[in-house]
Image (cartoon, rainbow, N blue to C red; front, side, top):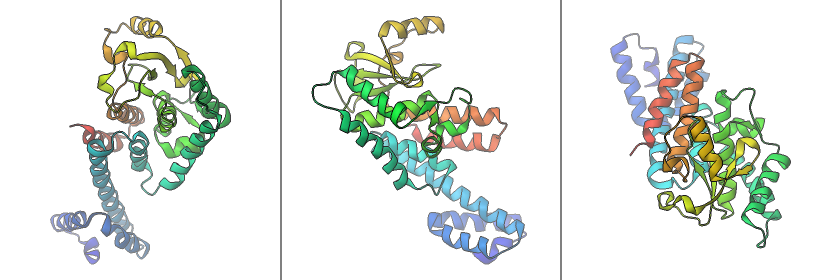
Amino acid sequence: MISLLDEPDAAIFSKVKERFFLYGHKAIPALENAWDNTFDDIIQKRIEDIIHEIQLKQLYRDLSAWRTQQSEDLMQGFMLISRYAYPDQDEKKIIDHIGAIIQDVWLELNANLTPLEKVKVISHIVFDVHKFEPNKPDSQSPRNNYLKDILETKKANPVSLSIIFIVVAQSLHIPVYGVNLPQNFIMAYTDQKTENTGSFSRDDVIFYINAFNRGAVFTRREVELFIRQMNLEEKDSYFLPCENTAILKRVFNNLIVAYENAGDTAKTDELKYLMKALNP
């Protein structure tokens, strides 16, 4: 198979590629070894393309499996999206980094704190201690949507900052959920914690949180005002917790827009393909 990587006939080479795809990830070490042992630019480019497509197909399968089996694990889903840009990312390092934030919050919590005080603790640790901040000057950058980049730069957009906030809160059994508000992304602190976000009503939300404003807290009335200012039709989904799949779709849409603006149609098409894995 490796010896056929220089096959000049396009039809035959297409069949060779399909054989590699059948092997999937098992073929990557052999392909990487072949890349290291050739100086032919054409063969190296072919190897890179095959490895990328293998990884893309595997990522689609992993996203689909996450949707059906692990969708309650928001951080895992967010890490999968990061794998698109960084297929060899150190996921243990990422988990340990988020774990350190959770640990710092846990040390500041106690049973006597009110919901508002708990949110203030999370905001203090995330934004003051660990120095995460909204990336307002470059909010359209793709790097705002990859967890690996966010942990390195400490800068992100509203959705990504909210994901970190939600993961930390829910890890400590604090009922904070994402709210899929158009033109923005906010969070809701509820009076119950559940895996079924569809069971909430507006009365279950105690207050809302804006991660892009360093964890500022606000009321339902302010959401209503925002909706009127945006000339949007009022919907329950703008006030209630959304599913984690909806959050990941927001991340995908942010990436698609970012790469469209940069004129990168190849990445745009690949991300649209990957986002389909989140559909039932």
